[in-house]
Image (cartoon, rainbow, N blue to C red):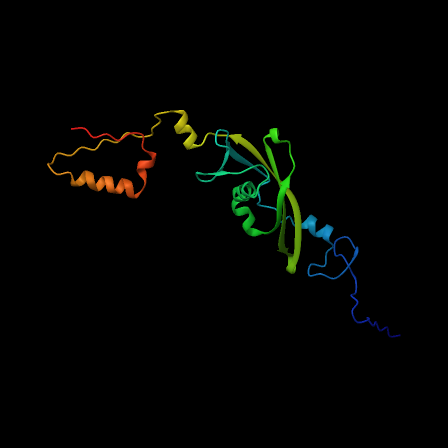
Length: 192
């Protein structure tokens, strides 16, 4: 006896999942989505919790290493700060969607919902949705700290020279102005 199978054009055949035996459409991994998710976690390496530093006085968030960004709750600017805080973890996956999950404003928690894709086993593309929770900690920025501490300083520099010309001091003054170091100085005074 001879059996022949004919498939109609435009229809796809079905196969059984190699793990659980469920009938599925053929894919590169030959597994159903449920079994594939149990085998592979594409969010591995992405932190699920983080810390955001917030200055209460000027209402800005710290974007590492030392840049402060003004952002409202659930704004695009705050979302970019949160995503940059995750760092290199997002380099291994493709970010499809990002948004906020509502939390109480006084809870000091910000939750972001991320949708990522990654190619896994034999070219199958897996998409996963997960939530990252950020804890907001209060931290005074350098500008507000300088205003609060009135004459706050980190270093005191004294330059002396025993010559009749002032070329060296003129050169130092030009370098200070070029690098905008005079903006952060508290006091400059010449003495004989």
